[in-house]
Image (cartoon, rainbow, N blue to C red; front, side):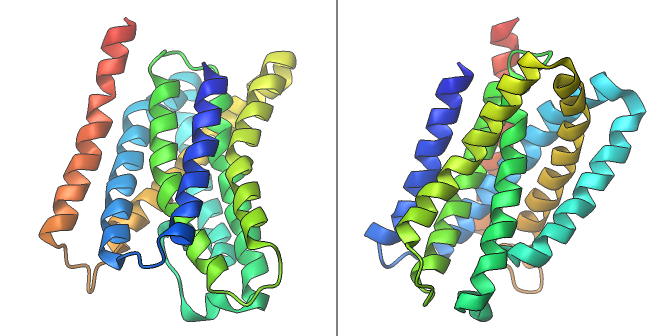
Length: 244
């Protein structure tokens, strides 16, 4: 089943990256609402599924690694300039600024694919994480695609979008294959997952506070998008009941 999840993740990321190619005029308000929904959904999935799994494995020590992951993402943001949050600044479109952004995004994408290859206690955790990551990857890919298409960078932009779509599935495959093959890798993943949780918490909360807001004001549409995102996250708990 995990192979199917990873195939869908690649497909959804690629679709997100292709949207700006085929639809030249994308309303900023639409991206804002998509970001708000995905941020709330990812936050809910992280709190309801990933965090309980990590605390079950590591106990109170999981909190240390979660904090570490939060600040790792803060450092990565210096490379990516917050593109994973849906932010595009005018200077980001310059060719010399794009390389570190792509590197930062790829590191982030590799991190967020790792939890997809882990063997969890609850059968509902893996599909729930897939949904949370997929919801985040779509606006992330849209933002990256817009950035590439508006940049004077001479590299093959379509190839970069394709390669970006591969990053998270590949990290999921590596985590799954080597985690099953080597005990030390499986043990290491137990500590890596809470680091990724910290990254997810940073990204999702940043999106919730900053996406499409001026002076942190919340529009009615954004409130609805956030409620829907959290509602869908809570709905994934039904997967647990079905599995049991």
